[in-house]
Image (cartoon, rainbow, N blue to C red):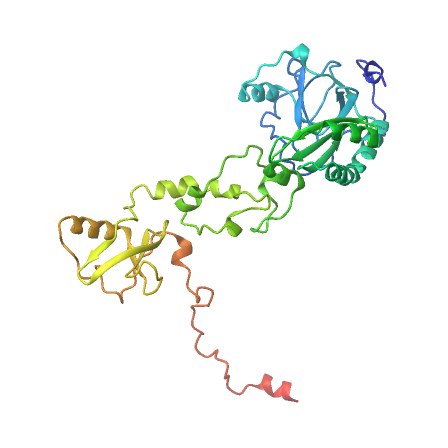
Length: 381
């Protein structure tokens, strides 16, 4: 089909039975339109943003001056042919997005929005999407037969079913020229290969994390920030790869979420590498509770037994005394039997096992052993 044949003429009416908007739902490429209260202005209708499968979107030129809204399914220009996507941003917000991305594309060089998708386009688009899983499985076997050290993680068909994008993972450089020839002969389509990382693959596939919620990378995370083991050390987490790694095999992205909070809380903390010299021996650091402001010390650094919880202020005081050559008798300034204050964390303050039990006493005359009453006599009869 020629591109000019599928363009809509200005003022052309759409069929009544056309599906105009996408069914509501959460997508991490959706944008909140905080300028939705402004009236429609044709001057800001020249460029719209269109999203496709999961992680792909771009800006397109509205050459036919269509009145598009967020969620409309449109046919856009592709190379070659045309593609089908959802309108994700319109109006003045598009200009703000371009400024945020620090890109100033030439409007005339942008690809075009042909028209709103018609039932025929939607039917072909659904047929193309139904082939993606079978194509991915077949392409994996072909790559394995060719001896290529790569994994094809996902396949995305173009809306007109003439082209497909194969997303693959590989640790090293892969020569897939022979693979492209075999795939083109097998599926009779144009082939495009795109390399992605393990986190991008997890975001495209989706799943449930150890927290019981849907993966962050498949719901709202679009920019992946590097995560190292130092992020876990700042939060005093155990360096267990099985607990710190996500479904992608990399360190969990959520290790970044509270990192700044932990760093700010530890700015005034004393060094953990300094042992505390006491009159009866040496106390070694074992672990800490950051938000409670507590260091745990033991007389033997190799055994986590007989540990003592020491407030940060007391640790700082002992270090200051040790520098003067003074060794205190005990770690705690107060007797060990006294209950130590554990900071302002409500979860730590209300962590007792009896916090859910009722504290109120029963009223007088309403105990379980009630005196004789006529109602009890009636029940017995």
